Image (cartoon, rainbow, N blue to C red; front, side):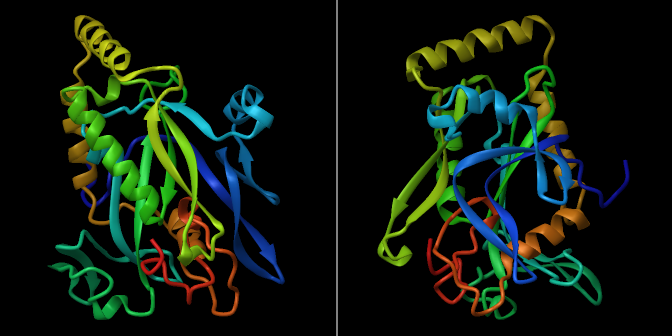
Length: 294
């Protein structure tokens, strides 16, 4: 295996609640109040929609896609959702420093060093809103490809905190059978004084509509038993994924990094209504500070 290259789940497409638009020659985030599922192909108009988007939207009220049935491919919550404080080089899109609030890996003249991570509020390198929370959630939508995932990227505390809590709770309640539970991503909105009473959209993870916890747990046990009888080894899959993530110093690829830079850092004076929406959670309108809002 190539050392220094993170081995991550295969990505079939993206899940977003916003998009980038061009206005006066500048790329700006535009909020939305629904999910969009896209492929990995871009056209002049932006990301091309995945066929699953139309399929799910056809059955949605008013064709507003506000919930998506999903399945986790790992039992370990930390393998499905990874979130760190991240600081990017604005020119190359490469991560310069990635930390968890305790320790960080930072690119220096001496190479990649492990240093203390005091969190963005206390880190000199992070001043000016340069370092922000960054989460990636991998979910399975297409059951014909058991290991293919769609990625939801977010820089919002509301989404990261809610998803992390839900994954941990469902993992505990199901006795570790997180990958066997029938789940769905749900779009929620709330207003706060910090958002000037405008809605802030974030992503939640719940049981699928019409399924109660007892039924979901029974379904999970049945699926787990059937999978084991077929010879499927979920524990080995989790361990392989864990080793793949740990293999790389920095996971980010250059194309994704440049997208994140566009969404992380906006020029002063381009303030827009506050909105938390995947990696568009830049929270314009309050001096460009994400950490002050969520």
